[in-house]
Image 1: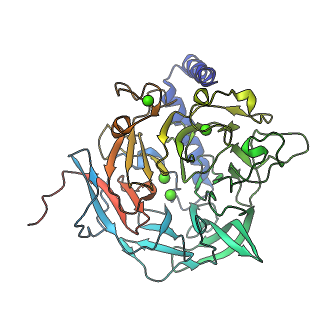
Image 2: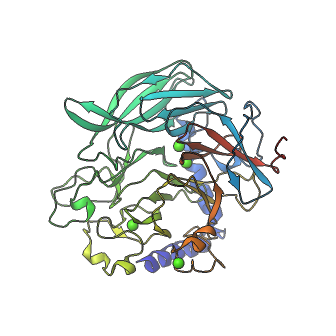
Image 3: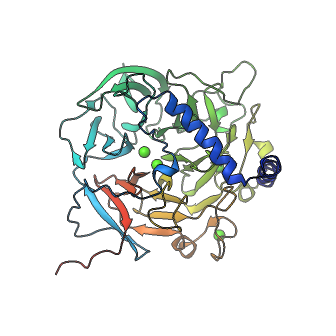
Length: 455
Ligand SMILES: [Ca+2]
Ligand SMILES: [Ca+2]
Ligand SMILES: [Ca+2]
Ligand SMILES: [Ca+2]
């Protein structure tokens, strides 16, 4: 399947070359910029979306509004020419962040349901909003995404994903708010009411606005055993183990999956055990996700429309499980694909970021960072030149796309000791890499060697 998909992509690339006489990367850029213009057109303010076009980031304009905080035990990086700065402290169990513009970051706090604002480098003490959450296990206020589609140029659209008590039930719900950039989120329109049980773990929760302007959200299996978990005689599709792709009213749009007598219209992908992060390749617009296995096999995947990740029949490469895609639940329009990378021992990987900036140098430009929660590790991967997988060239033992032992794992660990584990990673509007930790700190990675510690 993997090979077939690669061949199809190559064919598309070759066709594009023939038709346009341009490089495939350039033709993807055109698509991306067109999408962005569509988004911009709907937003007279011209404020950037969560997906900002690369050109805006390329110069690495420094945002000096942040004070660098003292950090006696900073995370360490394997590259001596860049460094980590702690820029915000004092968040409580933050799960997600989204940049609204060059000055503002909205951050969600898992356990107390508080939405925080960082504005001009300062963490505001007054919440933007507090929502009622169940917070046992992995439940809580889990995700935020920001779009700019309202007519009023000063108002943005903000989405929150959280586990809400409804009667005696847990529900995972997505609400849409308006935000004028000032003191609080208003509105609070429920757009998706999703199950939360039994759980209590595997709620997913990360959201992002795609280059197509649609809202994407990931949802874990909640420990269910149904058709969306590839159990053929299991219960019908029930909004678990999926990546949702919907408009701002929660309606499915343009998704390719279908089945007789079942509504799959909101699903972009399924067979996902759980995930704490996904991103869109800024060059191709293609979705990549990070998925969490049980004791073994965390995964990085390329998620084309209709993707079935294989859970709960397989995590990691299907060849190692000894089954075939024919053993999975195959809806109309679906396809299975192996991960482009796996960790044999699960490390609790969380968010991923395809770095949309050149400000840290060519090595990092449009390449991928992934965080984990178990160790506080930051992994780094180079994406191959046709953007169809990772370039692990030369790393012994990774030819099979699986880190099987500590030696193979060490080759892709880039940063260590992000205290409490990493929950979210973003390219900032200033072109630097921002990393949020569960311990409540926000770091950024900037060019330049670390200064010697004060004696
Ligand atoms: Ca984020
Ligand atoms: Ca998979
Ligand atoms: Ca290996
Ligand atoms: Ca991200």
